[in-house]
Image 1 (tube, protein in one colour):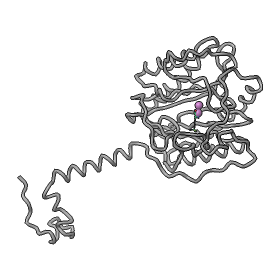
Image 2: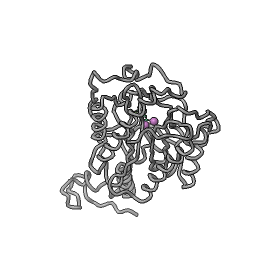
Image 3: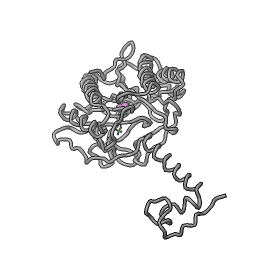
Image 4: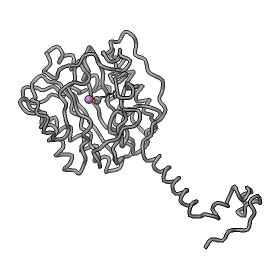
Length: 337
Ligand code: MF3
Ligand code: CO
Ligand code: CO
């Protein structure tokens, strides 16, 4: 049974804090269980806040000089594309332009990757990519691209830890042990080049390094499954087999895509074995493969911003992406520096 001290409400507290008893230990004396529970809840909330990504503050919009040609959606208030490419094989001229845009994307990805370290903010990474795109005469494709809530407000996607993809750069400070995916797309000479990679921030736990490594292997397996005359489905099957063989989940909600004059077009490139993906792979097609692999659940939840996707169980997730050209005997990776 609890003994209620005889201290009067307005007397100094018995603990010596100098505060009045009613403002200090009275509640703890009356209901110690409640006080302990509330304290435990506060500590748990603090642990969660430190463990998981939260939205930070966004910097003002970065401008693109007027002389740089913009993709059609960037001229629309809602970021909606006017035209959408077919997924059919590209002509030689388009392919030649894509080589240049894809190489630029790969170089920019390398540059931003070299800037990843504990203490850097995702907004600083965005600034680097924005500047690299503009200095090449290119437009950072994410900027102003349409979404369900708002057009994407930044020039780079930065997806930290349990963020699957489309994280928005902000004041978030990367810390030792984080993993961060940087997804770079540049619109250059009328075509897009799209590539991403997951980078380690300082010293990363073995299980997360393993995730990143296997995810890179998943992309390699997917690329190796590309064969003219084969089916889009073959790509996802190869990826899913490798990921699940390691006990990982394949995120379903986001797919690879045709890319060229349009940022996103057919075909949809599933990263799991989807029987509906019967489309034939033909020489001259250009598309991305960009598997997102999680340590746990493959299901996702969306933040209120309409962009940031996180794993439902908050397990960590990694991604790698290349833009490919289908050749006469396989695939050529265009996003190489
Ligand atoms: N680069 C992403 C992809 O691989 C798309 C980003 S859309 C954005 O398809 F609006 F979020 F930038
Ligand atoms: Co892509
Ligand atoms: Co991308």
